[in-house]
Amino acid sequence: MSVVVVATIRPLPHEVDAVRTAILAAVPRVHAEPGCELYAMHEADGTFVMVERWESPDALRVHGKAEALTTLGQRLAGRLTGAPEVRRLTPVPAGDAVKGTV
Image 1 (spheres, rainbow, N blue to C red):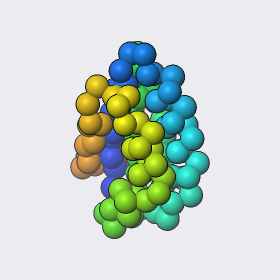
Image 2: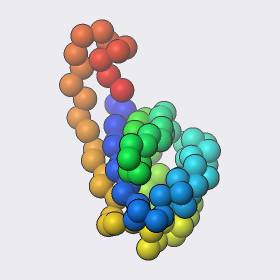
Image 3: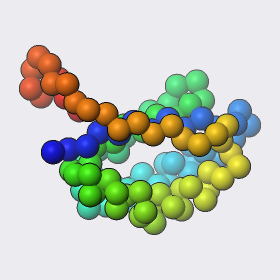
């Protein structure tokens, strides 16, 4: 069963461009990780939201310790208003099977 995660990253106002650049550099490496089904970056008003889907809880655990994420954490150090907010979601399928789930 896939695992869906939403991570919200809030940069300091003067660090938005640097944070965007750091995340963009990490995305291709995360896409190459085993079990990555979706890792999509979104932005609104200087806040970044990552929508993720992993093939299993094990794949998500491996991602949490993978080089791409540890390097990203180092590049984001001191540039955020606080720790990223990471939420693991439970799907509630509704309507069309394809359109009603991430």
